[in-house]
Length: 534
Image (tube, rainbow, N blue to C red; front, side, top):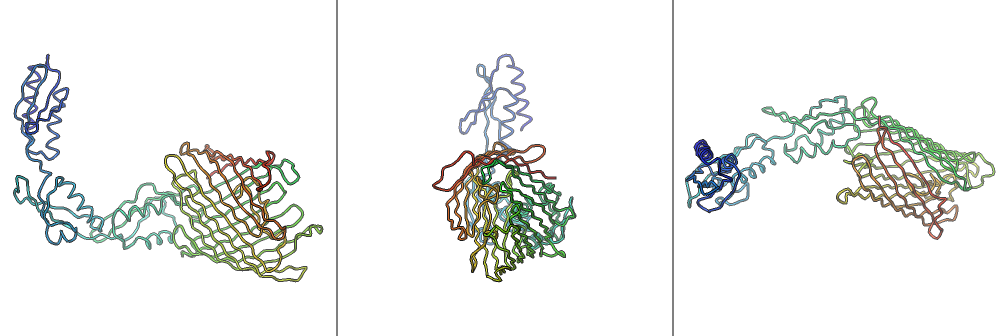
């Protein structure tokens, strides 16, 4: 038919080439008209009808009327419309009527096929059997050839193959034996998306054999070593303008065990210094048990020094959640005999903790969700007074990035801690907070308390996937029985974060004060930082 149409249109175009300006395609049944500019477009239109189930489209007439060529055609029957008949078993499984009429047979067959694929029948096929005509329309019988139901049997690692064996076993534990369907394939992809140590070079692929279904994961090792440096500018207690800073060096997955070693140093404007060393081995002896060792030293100029050791053992609930036990061994020495608010003491105790981290799809953000909860039972001995007191310590951190739409995000963060004791706490054992990563607008670790909480709402606008602006507002409260204080605090500020060839650059301006006190420009804090991964 197509060749005949081409010939007639070509012949007409030759005879009237000098005069014709357009082609009218007229449906003889509905009298609908479609106007095209040339013969090639007319042929394409008629050819498209057969591709859209008007298989017996017939050319009725071609004639010249003035400056136009009129082409009359009859589409004939639409073979995508049909009366459908199903078997009793198929009708019951699909929970639809045994006989019905459809205007889109192809869509119906795809819908039925997808339902069986979602049940694990990856190679199911829909067969049609022509049964004749009913009321001028074709009548067909649909049957399903299910073949073998497919379950996920295992995983094969390609690319970066030196991942911990327990990491692979955890994936198999979560997905082996489950139906092979789109839902589980997406779940596998999501579980590895934005993983801390590995990335997917391409979506998971499948190898089917006669009796097995294996998922191939093409992994790539991430650059996760990082250097994080922050320089701050502000005033100390004597109103003197000072520099302060933070250095954070992380070595991760060097030995392909997802292990990490972190070095942290911080100096605050009040001449306090913190040194923190932490080592983490997540899969000890190829198990889901991990160990963590943390050494923390804090020195307040020549006044006092605290040394804390926190050994911990934990269990991977899954790739995002960990729960663990830890010990606490802490000593504090007062070096200035005139510092009467402090006491020499030693602590020991045991505690539990829980950590949940959901990775983010936006590289500029550290994570999408983070939850950290800790609880410790402690025994503190004050050497000079020869007193031993029981204590409890709690800590809770929750943070999440919410997508508002477009380029708009909202970061919500809350943090709270409590140190409860049978006796009065000395100043050198109080909780310390404030600064870049907690209550902004205040100097680093300049706020002392036996209990505190604060909340932050931060609006973020993504300029691109390389930069974002932010503005924030914080509210908090602290309690210090030793100092007799219970102030209510607030802070605000704005910043800009963007990627440079050397890493993620951050610039932040903030200010904060106690309710009832004026905001002073001289208390403005400026922080500038760079995060580099290598």
